[in-house]
Length: 178
Image (cartoon, rainbow, N blue to C red; front, side, top):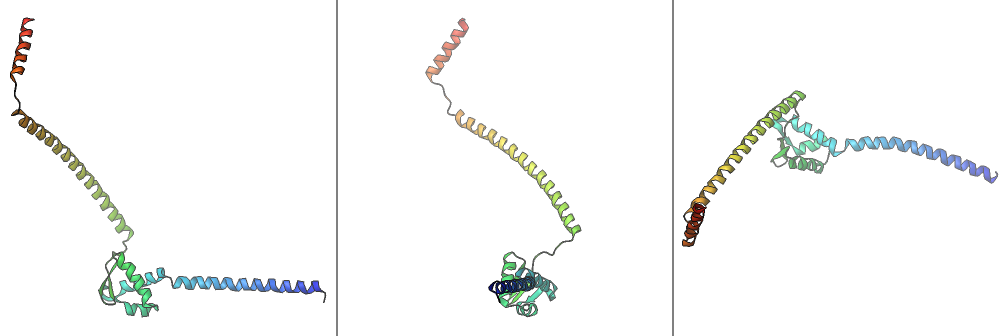
């Protein structure tokens, strides 16, 4: 066989092998992505919370949860540490937790809560305005009281010297003589 023909055959074989490798790899990537998502902490946390909310009296045994979810206890502890940190769960006893967070509200409940918050905001603004007005009034009274105290303290120290009196008599005489 001439050399150019064998090179062509080798290149063709390599190209088709590479194509089939990429096709196989793409199917592996999508299955890897799915299995990776299936084992993610996000999905595991959702499943854990569902277990917790479905548990009797809101108490969940972490060993049983690990077995039911088919994961290592370390993964369960990762989840419980975060949920404890944001105060959604608390430990009852060793290996037992319970839900203390709020449940998700319906759209009507959220709308009602929003209306209540708006009403509370209006009420608080009115109350704040009244407090500011009261503060201004008290500051005016304080200034008046301070002025009165200063005047009373200074009044007993007020005196006139003989020179002051003579000077005032001179002023009086000059005014009468004019």
